[in-house]
Length: 258
Image 1 (cartoon, rainbow, N blue to C red):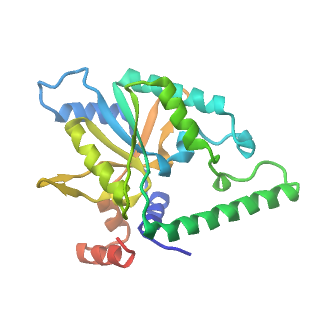
Image 2: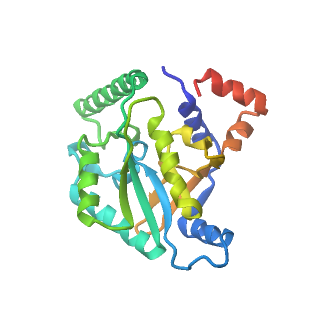
């Protein structure tokens, strides 16, 4: 089994009480922290790390997922998301990973093996004629999901739903470019939705620290009533969960490859 810092994050999400926030609450707090001269019609921004948020962007767990899913449902889900963003003056930036790096090949290979195991478990479940569908942990995103998501976003062509793609060659280029991209939003940025622990750490640009508020991709939820809910994860929660001081925590991250 491959163990990394993201596995530690998974453990934190499972075993720590969730700090849930309504997006309205986050926007309200953001507005209060700004200058009095800030416009009440200001557009706020939330970054979505697409590759780590596929299951939540798909629109939930539905019985037809074994057959590839109903793309009409996906389209309806994105429309509901758009309406919520319009009501809240919120802009979602969908960040796609377009980088290539040699050190990521081993991770990609490991992920393919895990997906193959899931597929075998699904077929085993069906061959045994068990009642009901396979459990949620066996869910796999349809192969063309990202392409369909891009197509929908282009068709809608809304200033509330925009796309950004990172590029280049090198480890962590995707994460670093998103941090750089986030700088332009300054005080209007609420944070990033991801499951990559890299975004918990700051990046220094021109003597300024870029610290993104980090929200778990596993708990990104849009209700049927159009209510958007996020769960925030903070770095100090990791230290408290494992009862580590700063030195011990730094050593742990070093051993895990951070």
